[in-house]
Length: 498
Ligand code: KIV
Ligand code: ZN
Picture (spheres, rainbow, N blue to C red):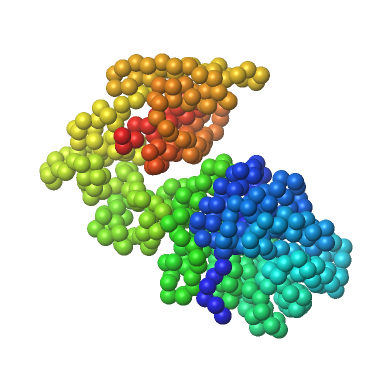
């Protein structure tokens, strides 16, 4: 058994099925190129028969990337397979991914059929796909709820018909980790010639067990995992690529390797999130904003003494430059001292004690204390840190009218004004701001949340702006969400290093 684990990325097929998160072909090409750089082995580029858009995306992705296998999904239907092969014509390495539901629920309610008939259709589809390509993957949809004995018969039959990879999806995210382990083990032990094919996992996250199930599948002998960036996908999503890649990197003793260049994880995650307009939950493993942020005093003290006290991974290994220690009311002196040091201020213990008291008072009022705040506490010159302030903002917007914004900024005491129109009030306001601050900056992430409930609630805006090759994070809060958005943008600008 090979100890190389193949990464099959389905961000552009299963991941893209999330309602409201569809990508256009250009955006899909961007993601596909990032996946190639990340080092995935297979890119599932789409379901060509499902729409002309999917068909042309598979064609264009095939042209745009070289090394990964390009895979196209089909049902166990000849016409689907014809169209998939047509869409794959420019792919250097092609795979057809065909299959059918094998659980009794699917056989009975979806197909009004019988186990024997489904087995025949599975074999016929595999043979048909095999006429076009060598690399045929067969999926047993809802394998998670399929009786193991019958599943083994289907797997054995499709391998005999030429399937090179057999996918065992837990389509509904129902399996328990031990159950999924036993399922793969059962197939390994009961299917003749099982080693002629690679067994693949494909786990959904309905009960939050996708990663655990995938990992257990690998422990039982699966050597391909079907995953998505940020775990996106229908309902609760699919297994996260980044979680599986980092589990195997952190647990080298398992002796299972992938081709993933883990330092590309973070930028790829942010790319997918921003193109799909899907914010990443702050506490998401590996790629969440807080994944490496230590906020309690004990943790911060430990991390500053030696990162190994509380960190099992180096943030740099996933492409994050620096672990951000968030300063809150629970932070200790060591964290404050470190933050001041990072800002070029080194203090004697006595002065630090005094500032620490002030810091605690401030932290009681503010959820998070920023660099500018600690510099102010230390009496350092903060003129630059808060160089830009919003003086006023006026926006006209509504249905059937073009949004227009006028903005007034105070930049280090000097007043500036500008106006612009845009595609919505936030766009208009930011365009007006950019007429005053003419820096090459790009909005990368933009999320609006209400703090509690009700139409008079304060809106919180989180933004990420890219400037000079770096990402800056900004925050704004206001009952007017357009003002909150501009304040978050300005917060980013005030953090620019030059
Ligand atoms: O979840 C699933 O069963 C699938 C198959 C179509 C592979 O996505
Ligand atoms: Zn799926």
